[in-house]
Length: 581
Image 1 (cartoon, one colour):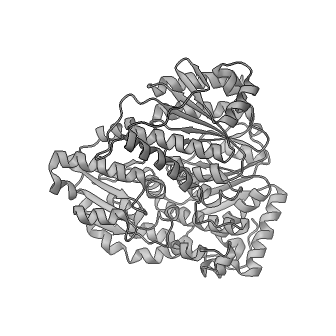
Image 2 (cartoon, rainbow, N blue to C red):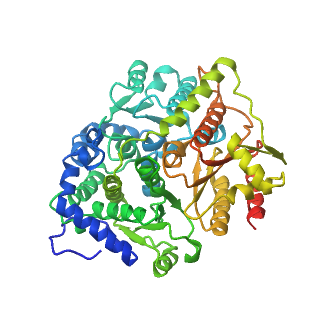
Image 3 (tube, rainbow, N blue to C red):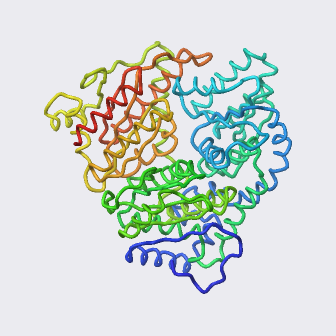
């Protein structure tokens, strides 16, 4: 961007620079000029719903005032912050916006000296839950149950499970003293917290949606338990908020600039937003994925975000990419040279340097502004998520059926080979059978992935335990598909992606080719007071999500592994390699 002659903000801000192709750079400048001429940033801050669709957008803009509002909240968190030091562990139970932001803070700052180790459970996988539980001393663990609606399936089941475990170890009265709730007013969780005598109850703001809530109590309560300096965190966000307000020239407005780039890239066919988060910011891409996907992926349009790890030769990437690289000052990223090579080859690359760990709060606010701006340019409502609910309804139908009958509906695989089963809806099954020719795993995988065309993306959706081994195997498979097809490849673990990128997969453009991966459970884990266990919930979530993908006419195939997910993944990865050789 060419600097303007207008006064620049005086705050010490994270820097942003962009190397864009000439046509894209010109489009960004035109967009910024239009926002300047029409004073649209003032309309944004004025909660003018006509900037978007003229719907109910104005009631979801409480996050704009978060820095000011949270100054008043800091006092109520002081006592809690001190109390948290008594514990060895803090366990956060939440999904989506309630967990991804706190995860960024936990991994960005690491464990603070003299403060508890922070853990997040945002899964219904029995193995993953058991592994987390085994790492805890429950007698010395503080549990934060975080849910805006208070009715979300996963945190409610997890609360019931860990509450029962701590009660069994310490008794009901002591267990309640170790429970903290963060929820919106008048939610079911608020009623539970009061009825069961939770140690503390923190209320959120109904005018702030979940994915915009990281600087509200949904992020600050976990931050306090980690021992972070909350005043410093809020001051950092305030600096970015001030720089994004009316009165700042459009070309100098850091949030508006990023939003204009995102929207102009989308209009140019570069809808695959590829985010590289440098050392010290490793989890930021996952948080940004939810913000971008849920906000923009609807009405058949949207930006498809990819939290990327590896950088390859520029020739691997198609002309549907926009790259953003976030780097923490003083922490060199070994991918710097490879990312520079992308820019040298003509790919659009945006670089953001984050001044220090606390300045991650600036990026939270910048990306929220940028997303609102991009939504306005796209002409969509960036604060709803209409297609997330569809998968929840399908899941609820299956869990209710299991609660009544003790079983879920029978399924018939379209192929069984070597302990792996393939499933698909009738339309996908028919097409794959015609394309595959041979009734083999390799042939079906090749037929499925050959459906990737120009501008398409693949998505690996794994309802498996999320750990280093499974991530490594899936990352390898991701690269094999990307390099063979020159297509963007998303990777998500269920059920957490259902509260994140799941919106763009179902509500965005029909350009995805989906490979869902599930597995047999070695041993389920009971949910207190329910007939079903976590394994049944996970299976219902996978099947419910697949059903909605099929209803939306998506190209989808489900691969069901045996009870050893690592061995099954290795078998699947080998088959993908052969299929694409």
